[in-house]
Structure formats: C-alpha cells, structure tokens
Length: 88
Image (cartoon, rainbow, N blue to C red; front, side, top):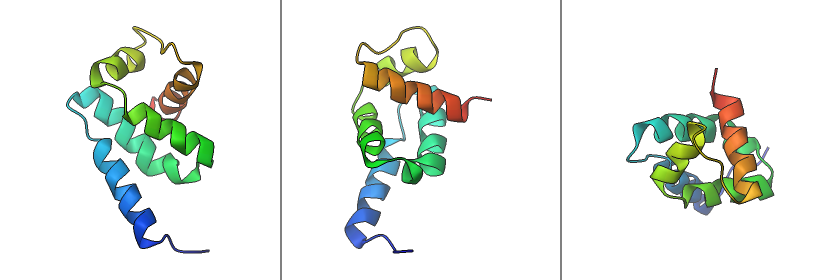
C-alpha cells in the first residue's frame, strides 16, 4: 500500500475544508460522506464529488432535502450517492 504524496494529502485537506459549509444541514451530509467514502471512489466519481463541492449551498440544501433535483444527471447521481451512504 502506497502512502499519499504531500500534494495528495494537501488536496485531501483542501477538499475536507470545502465540505464545511454555511448551511449546517449540507455540511452534516458532505463531511461524513467525504471522510468515510471519498478515498474509495473511482477517479471519475472523485472528480464528480469535487464538482458537487463547487455548487452553491442553497442548491445543495434543496437537493439533499429532496425539494429539487440537479438538472445535471451526473450531479443527481452523486447527490444520490451522498444521500444513500449517509442517511439512515
């Protein structure tokens, strides 16, 4: 098993920081998903999660509370992954 490089560790810490959001309901889904599942995702899904982090908190809140669905089917898929792996 190889250890992550310093740049990979820095990237991970930066992403972890970006999981901290202004809307607590969004953060309590993003952060546990990231910490428990991000490293096991394939590269494409990791990039997709990073794309999710670029979205506005209000939009993510709507998606995570099932009030709306992302127009982008790939974002809808990652939202589903987050909800499926974090919600009870």
